[in-house]
Amino acid sequence: MESGAESDDHEDFQTPLFIPSFKRKVETIEEEEEEMGDVDRSEQNACAVCRKKWNTTGMHRLIQLKCGHLFGKSCIDQVLRTAHMKSLDSYCPLCCDIINKRDIRAIWPQSILLEDPDTINQLQSRVEEARKTLQQAEYQRGILQEELLLYKTELTLAKNKEAALMNLAPIPILDVLPDIRNQFKLKQNFQLNTEKYRVMTIVPNHCMAVISVHNNHRYGLRKVNLMDTSITDYIDNHHGLIRDVKHSLHEELLLSTGLDKTIKLTSYESNNIVLSYALNVPGWSCSFDNNDSNLFYCGLANNTMLMFDTRNISKPILELKEPRTSTIPIHSLNVCNLYDKNLNINTILCSNLTHTYAWNITHNGSENKYIPIPNEAGYKPFSTYYENNTLFTSLRNASSTKYLSSHNISINTEEIEMADTVLFEYSDYKQTSLSRNIHFEQDGTTVFCIALDNKVIIRTKDEVMQELLLNKPVIDIKHSIVNNMEILSCLSENELRLFSISTCIPL
Image (cartoon, rainbow, N blue to C red; front, side, top):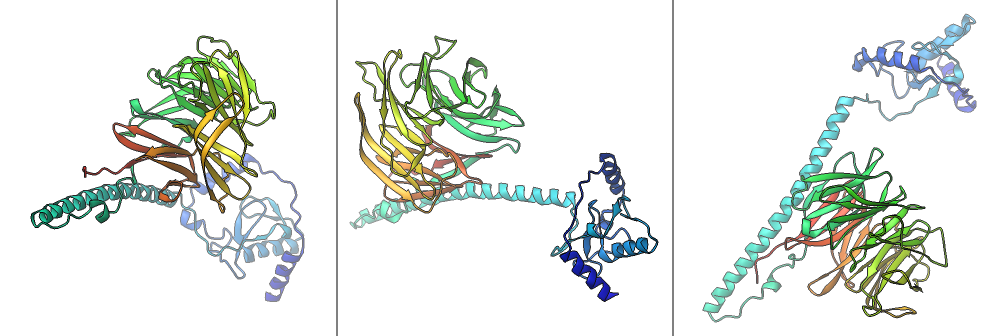
């Protein structure tokens, strides 16, 4: 018998399996599920023929029939032999589907464990509790570090007083203490398990982050309080994925555009849509004008830029299309303060998936000038950010990532001049997503924030200052000053994390 079994095993591995097209009836599956619901779960890892537990090896090892049912191999071999001796068809002992030798499929698990939904739920709950505990520990660690810094500072001040009484040289405080005063510490986080996020904007004077949300075919904006993330509200204002959102510097308005081919103005006070414009193609980027509260702009999926005026509620007042390409989306749109007040001209920086360029336009759209910007050879931009007369451009190719920072930008009617360009590179990192990187000024130094997978790298042009960790790849970063607190908001697809600067007593 053993030699026969070995022969059968040999044929199973050598003979090609013919699996006919077969669809089981839904009614049969539902009936089986109802029947299995009454079976003791401790018996579900046993062979239905002999009621003995199947094994991972040997004669009674685990096999599967084409109907999906599992048995010990020796039991199914006996079913097939008995039917063959009587010249009858063989049937699955559970569902009575016709079976034959070709239907036997060996399963080779390292071990057999019964899937228990209750156990899985318990494990998932433990993971969630552990995650919350870790976040709380990170928060407490930040507080303790701040307290330690305060105590060390007080100790040094006390020693200096003692030294002064003894006519000794004072101890330099900054030499004694590690400089963690400018380190960002995790303060709060926000996430809802059913929501996915894409972009955000920060409204500092209302202490609020506004995040684009998609959830079960619902698309809108979520407002989150930066001091207490449990305070939140949702605005349902789009019918497709939102690609960009900005807030007005002049009014209590949000500007958003997305794949539903609309650009909308929404009040974040009333949560109502104020104006909505239809687009011919999906919107990818948007921006308010920095000086005229009536003007705003939209970058489209076909490399077209539109200029709108809220006093014209029917259509854009200007449409500008780059001469070079027509099918590449504008992923970044920056309104620069390079305009000539005498000529009433604005400069709009546009970046698509291959290069960056600019438009010089008048406020009424009567005159405009296209200005190409030289690109780093072999690289393509995936994010551009303009602030304080500095343009920060993130570029990528198939194997590495570069970052360019250009200061003291000036403009004339023919070209944009960029001085003091700083370049740093991550040659072993391949950027795959359109994450948004930023820069800001801190104590007279330009600080860059770069998303590398699930890390935020905080650095100057010369060195890395700090690394922040998120649970998933970072897709957006924003820096803001709220209530005299420096906050770095970091967004992944399912979580917002808020980091703030440690405090210290005056030195």
